[in-house]
Image (cartoon, rainbow, N blue to C red; front, top):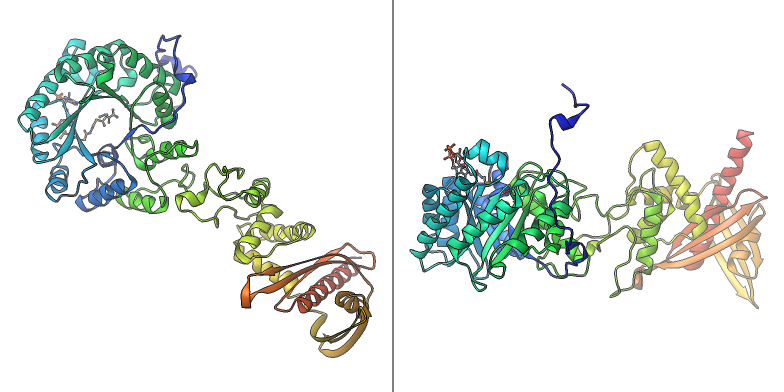
Length: 558
Ligand SMILES: CC(=O)SCCNC(=O)CCNC(=O)[C@H](O)C(C)(C)COP(=O)(O)OP(=O)(O)OC[C@H]1O[C@@H](n2cnc3c(N)ncnc32)[C@H](O)[C@@H]1OP(=O)(O)O
Ligand SMILES: CC(C)C(=O)C(=O)O
């Protein structure tokens, strides 16, 4: 068994729609469509273990919380679980006034009757029915010609209309799906839908939903958009019809197909949270909504706590959400690579509160969907100084000066290469600590006395050298110069920075110094202390000890 050299022997290309004056490519989506969640129906029917009543209820409440106003809650004629769930929703008063439940049925009278039984007493409900219209389904599933398949749709529509009329206490809505619309001859799809329109006699105030599913995605999304535009131009009573789209993701373009379909005139979009659904899934409603949001359009759905929504969905579906899933995956706001991290860090530094979002590589501010910035930058062997610096700034308030960032990133790089693993902010901080703050050998500053007179500073330092205490004294224009002059080796101070860490009574000073010893490569030291002079002295000792160690290593290597 292997792939064919000539797949055209087995597979045929999709049929193109002739619509040269198509208008959808120039359209912009500037408002949210009507959303329908089919998590509890299409999503549920595709699970290894369909949801029980408790899971369905938990999921339903989550959908309501997110802001869904139309929710397909099941296929009540299919199973007792679904039937009972619909009853519980209605009898238990779980449906908010602004939410409409929808249920699905095949176009078969016995199933339709059972469906209406399940809906008894509902304030509002949409009855959704379907039959496949595509040529292969006509031939393979129904063994019917076009007229036969159209007759199924009309007959079932008439039964639905009759049963609805017998239950006037419910405000009814109706939806018809020519299943596999995506592969149906477009003029025949319109013909069947027009026949269904004749049955329901919709009005602008009481429109019929015609759902045009890409039951199996079999073409590029532009072709689907062409189908939707063509359909919208040719269907009767367009002002009394809501065109709904229901895309699956077999070719991986379900999101694109839905978006282009909305540009082509669709009023309503059906899908599932995080793309659950038959085979490769239904289109992901979260992605569609947040795609709108990041264009500045209010999606009318609220994912302010996207991880809480994900948890419900994962628990109920018993399926994990992929770490690369748009907007929600664990890794989608994370940069490991150096150039991305550098740009993100600069972006955060320049991003002004209240201004347009412009942080590179982050299409959405993670904070808007309840994510913190902790995971935005993670460090491994692909990372550079930007990421390391970002983590130290964010987590520890440590702002390394630029040349020190370069120096320390090499230390981190060596460690990530050695470990072959990611390093967390805390591991990086520990490395900084051991490399710089614990650089107390051979010279450890134990204490100092500083006097200042007539612009001249004088330092007496108590220093531990190889276990022995020594006194070093020096003077200069400032405290640091005075201490430098007391050292047993000549050092050249190349650069110096300081800043506060934290505020109030707990504030500390962080000092960074760069020195050169006897013409060697310049090296940095850090000191952190409540007292700024002590911090600067510690920084000098940290640099000195590192420089001495470097000189020793050089001598040994020679
Ligand atoms: C694309 C979609 O997702 S469509 C939704 C699919 N979802 C589901 O099917 C989940 C729930 N379904 C079920 O539990 C079952 O299918 C039931 C209970 C509804 C019906 O079960 P059964 O009566 O055993 O029928 P089954 O599902 O095997 O359907 C086959 C029969 O229905 C006919 N049929 C299939 N779909 C439809 C339809 N939409 N309208 C009318 N008849 C249909 C078939 O032609 C076939 O008829 P035949 O027996 O005369 O050849
Ligand atoms: C019932 C219909 C809308 C469906 O689920 C599909 O075609 O995918």
